[in-house]
Image 1 (tube, rainbow, N blue to C red):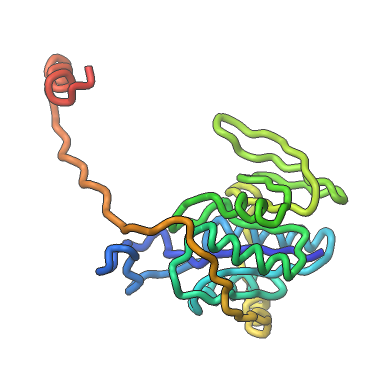
Image 2: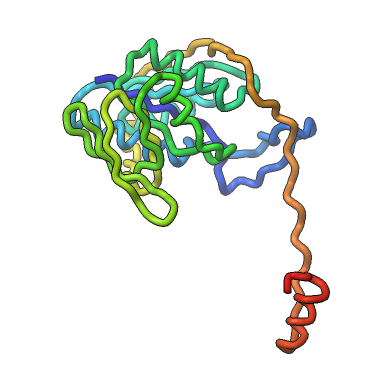
Length: 244
């Protein structure tokens, strides 16, 4: 069984993000980049699937040479190999999905794992797009997964609760926090990762279907007011805020 995990290299959420001079990108100077946190759940579930059924776990990413840092971490966790589709230009979600799907077809994967979203753009659409482009079944925001032969049973989060769905291979699974507890790379895994292959290829570039216009900071919040009586609070809500 060939299992592909699509991963992304993103700014650490603890980093302070500044807008670059072009107004269309963020300033990478001084930023710490990490493996996308949701992708760690995807990698862990892929490794658990391999341990149970056998096969091969292949990491797949699209980006510049810095993305190898996150691929190395995934290899240290236990993935077998990695492929980096090299690209230094802006590509929207659909263009990225098409390039990834093109490579997944070449690999012939039966299961594709992705994090439910990347923490930089937060579009939360990659899993669904890949499934459509590959003509695979799809399960999003999965918090549990059971594989029985060709059958997939998964619990997924929905607004106000959870639902259990059943589908079959081939499938794209979008991993949500709670699906598992990602393992930490140990020293043996880190040393082994240095010998594992990261194959680099030029990404196939598809047309973008959306245009990135720019980044803007949210407006600053106005200062709060302290009131000393309920009557004054009601007056302010009626006359200034005009919400009652």
